[in-house]
Length: 384
Ligand code: SAH
Ligand code: SF4
Image (cartoon, rainbow, N blue to C red; front, top):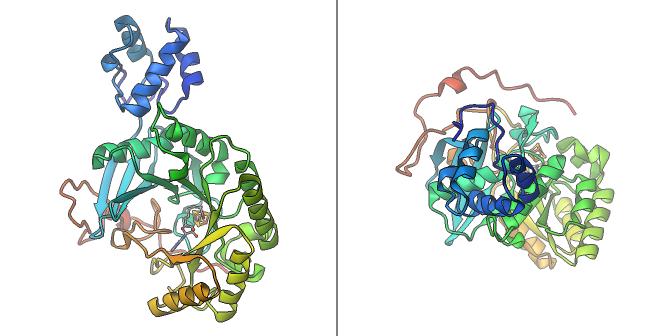
């Protein structure tokens, strides 16, 4: 097989059946061979064509000559005491992203990245500080799942959330192609209902999602109850203000008959006032939605916000429950490994405790890594 480090041969990993069939046709393959290769790649996670035992030997040899099969590699990992593991993943086309595995009451959830960096520049998110480096291909997205499945010896049942680095709807087509590979019974075989895509509120993406045949669940990062605050926190609001976003959410629920989730990161003194809570209740009750409150995960020196105190978070939850809002708190997981929401970034932020750790110990370096020493100074707070 062509070596995975050799960039020249085209990569088969990430292609769907049709694209595989097109690619292998000139090597004497029949269309049904594409279906067989599809199963080897995504269902069995066997990347060396010599092991594809239901294909003729000469065809396997020709494929090994002409292509590489590269889902990426795990470059390092860091574990937190709560069972959260952050993976640094070296991508097949270059660069690194982070993906996170979380375990809660036997249930495993993988948090995937859809882009290297993010263009949307939310003021409370470390990924936003990277800017957009590039979009990920479907293979680079599902490769994160395959690598973590292999490393953690995961069975076939787990949840996937697109809540890592990037805005999934800014990379819509590739994310949906990845969702189809994940949901294909002969691929990863995951129920589409176990897959959730979280958006900062790109309205055209919400509209498109409603008509997808294989549709993941929708989560919408609301994070403010007035346009003035949301404009400041999330520049995307200037293009798609709250009323427009809520209209798209309502149309989505109507067209699909599905409930969705609002996410709301609680920032002390910014979006956690009593008036915010009353407005939030009205917004959520007016939709087929439930609400996840997310305590802010700070990155001192980089993100200029404070978390709402725990007692305040619980009081907000209780007030919302009293107002008949279906609400839960998503307590942060993996913060000590910098693996929590909004803490994923490569090349910006504090030192990354990502190193090879086979023992699953907590891995927090006691001195800054080289990358951290070389990092640029924290950006000054921007005026909005
Ligand atoms: N770009 C998408 C998905 C990735 S962000 C989106 O914005 O929805 C996933 C979630 O993390 C979002 O709900 C976002 O609001 C939240 N988030 C970002 N930074 C955070 C931080 N520092 N603390 C807590 N949550 C954060
Ligand atoms: Fe991008 Fe989401 Fe972070 Fe905003 S919160 S910068 S959309 S990753």
